[in-house]
Image (tube, rainbow, N blue to C red; front, side, top):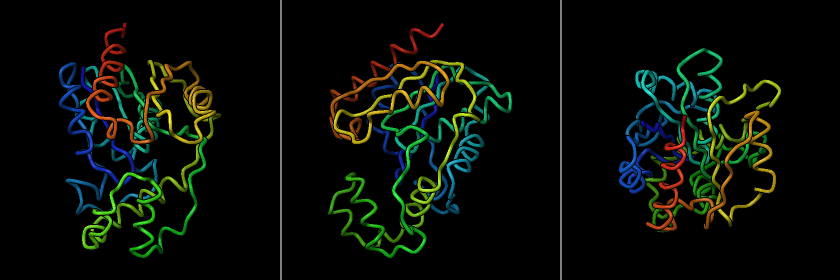
Length: 236
């Protein structure tokens, strides 16, 4: 089985490097960069989740004639959700399973900000708020300047994202949503994902904060890999 994966906001496909080494024992794992991220740093940024999903489709459309799954982390989970909506509404080959990690439900209201006009320090504060970037990296002004367009674009895309469960289509495949035990505002995560997907989901809570897959070491990498491989084994 092939898994097509999308990263969290401000991140690149490279975030999955260690996880890919583990999950590739069970399946073919491929991650993709958004415009202006990672290997596509020179591309123009994209400012909406729906455009990110359109771009994601353009990247995977040559790969979906064979069985596949979708996976997304944080913003990537919302991109995967919107991508599924596009695939189903346009009668494209659908994934066999969807894995959503560390992702807020589609009804979640993201932090507001005048991100278009943020200066360098403002961009750094975006990253500090996410608690996923070390102060050593934040001290590298040239690097942050280089990444600033994509950081602003992702922040705008999340800020402006809205979705109504009245217009979403039922998911015809299994869905697993995994959240960290120390993540905030997860009280209604399960019921809201089920409302938007119009189906029951496999909802898991694992040890860790928002970046549980990347901060908790090999044990967590193995745990998530096992959850995924078990779900794939049970696909009818």
